[in-house]
Length: 110
Image (cartoon, rainbow, N blue to C red; front, side, top):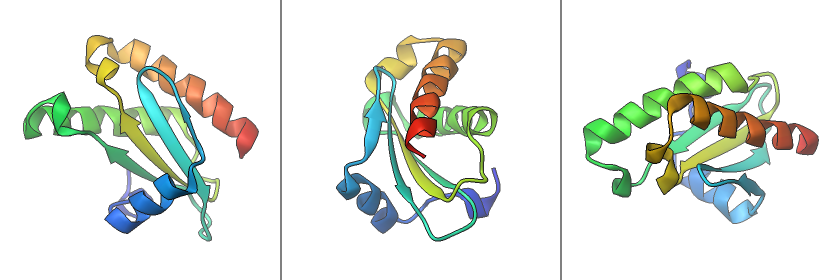
């Protein structure tokens, strides 16, 4: 995922959470909001409950791979993907299926 598609600023994360537009399931919570750009941006939030820095970075790499497989960058939306505790209990295939389910719900909204 290219750098321009990243949401890194804490203010952007807060803006998305305060908009209160989200979908969730047992594995992910996805906040979303329209942006003024011609492409989508993604932020990933992995809490300290999920392990040390090495484990959290591993999860972020997995999520970036899932994003490239599931989402389209052509929409003008900002997304914040928050990882829930059940993520570690499931396999990669189960997690990507759960993210696809949320993405299909988002398509109806977008």
